[in-house]
Image (tube, rainbow, N blue to C red; front, side, top):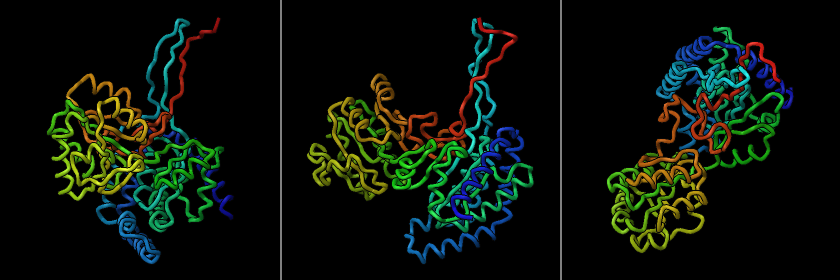
Length: 418
């Protein structure tokens, strides 16, 4: 079977499975999640052996240390997958929830019911644990899933797919409700994103190039984010201690995440006193600062920032710094150069904070908190399938609710329209 025929078959099977999943009870879905957890626990040796194949092949192919680290399935990471499945099983099931019920003058009642999206295609790179994260969230939200992992993790993903299939069979759910693409041919991605008759939504998780390609070529709705160009704005009325702690944490807690601060904005009225202290702290932590002319007048050893720095997601110990005259300039900078991901204001002025929340056009907007909190687990979602910077129904960390939609339900008692 060629790749196109293979993907069509997966699509047909997923569509049929999605109809069964829409009928599945919460108990059925939870039993499946816990059964997968048991299978993974019982298959540790098989999983480690498969992962060792991937690791050896990756080393031969010249994968760098960071990618090899993401690829490796350690005992701790296997334990984390098991714990994640158990946590998702414990989450409330959004499917079937009816909200906003109200009577109309005609006598009918109208409300909204939460329903699965249908078939979700997920395209990701490197980390095999994403296979389990994606499968668990799709299962709990009543969706069928087609998972296409990176070629570097093919053996690990096939082994995990066996665990999933065995568990689904044991609890009586369709095996095709979670399918892992078993070919590394890149044509499979092209087919998956152009099958609207079988696939309802695509979720890409990977580098900017992958997401841009999928956004450009897909004939299916895409939930995505391209960049995490996040800002912290220190207002003139900021609490000094809060500002320093948040600015340090937002940048240095982890460098390679999409919710890490990449540009620091500081009000001109406070910059002269707070910026030298921040610069000293960043220097001790090995962070390179790239500042505007006004910032360099205060901290002379900053590298001169260029226009490109305001657009940059460094994912590294580098930080752009800009002095602004007021909050309006800060908001304008964020809305011009940001990626609509996460932005935070540090201020004790309630009125200014409310204005910032209203006018900053990002999926997460914060007051007196680190941007590193923009995460599904930290938001109480239990897990996330990604962070969306789109303006569709799913925006910000995408958990179970983001993998569902709503339909209107109407309850009557013989009413007819006059």
